[in-house]
Length: 483
Image (cartoon, rainbow, N blue to C red; front, side, top):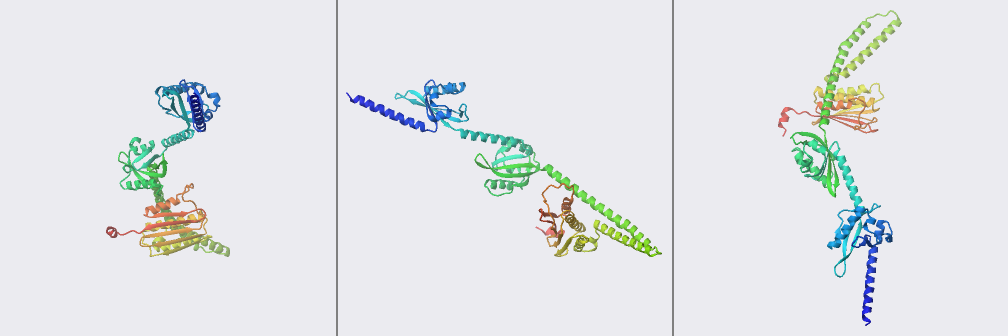
């Protein structure tokens, strides 16, 4: 008789202990847990749920979904809860939900709670705080939107690729440069857009950059457009990451207009040099043949004058001396404009004489030395190097404040090289020039016309070195023999 009540008491005590354990687990959970009845009324919430909603549990238990959430959202919650009651299957919210009055986002799951007969008596809700994930995804979307806005409005072509034949982003400007549509380019292999000579090089650069190897960051190539024509381009590329994958970002610039401007500038510089040499020749001829003859004739006529007194003889002597100085200055000026010394003396001697002229009357020391055999140069090539040294010495004395200049002519079987090094204040060769002059450009253009190169090495406070190199010209018979 007393056994049944004792069994019942043990069962009730066990049930209470289990409920206590479940409550402890629920309260310790970082996720929000809640129980709802068939009408969507909250029968229980844990401390995390109260913290999520920012209100004490006592104010929330017994409330309807529409009392906590805006009406439309509350009605949607009630329908989801009733669907779990009706179907007996768990339900998952497809999208994150923002809790009212907070910046907290949750992901909610609804699970049926059944009695011993299998009937659904409650719905258990589990809401997990996913604010950090939502904000990270939102920030990522904003960055991608900003990137696309920048990319689509860029003046240069923009490509992001994870492989030479997998372009995951192409902007509209790249489509305009290539003549293909964005959709066509996204399925394009980089080798189809390069010349036969450059295809392997461009592909190799991309593959090596994807592997993290060091390759040129900027280089020039030619782009094959859809219509079959080629245009010169400049590619600036760097390794990046796109959605967790190693990728290459390349900026493609159409430099056709830049090339045309460069050609026009070089043409203008060449024309200016030609005009300059023509004018120098004309002025030199006028000085030598006309003014020089007039001064010589004047000197003869004055020399024939007989002075009667000491003062007149003194004045006559001064006038003749001034005439001699003027004649010497005119001859030097005519010689510098069109140096006949290049025809009369060896080339090394002509350069040595030029260095001597710059030494005269200046607080400056210019030295000259020559090495190797005597260079075999045409008069045009001699004049080219002579003008380079003349311009370099002039720049060093006028602009650099140099006190010492060393000039060296070196001749080998391969080339003739002229080096002019000064100890002046130096400059930045890459800085934009604003003096309106064409000195450096003219020097480079002269060397290009003669088939040579000009290198300028300088930095502020470290002096300047000008290196002019002319390759040896082979005879026709030797050219034919060359492989």
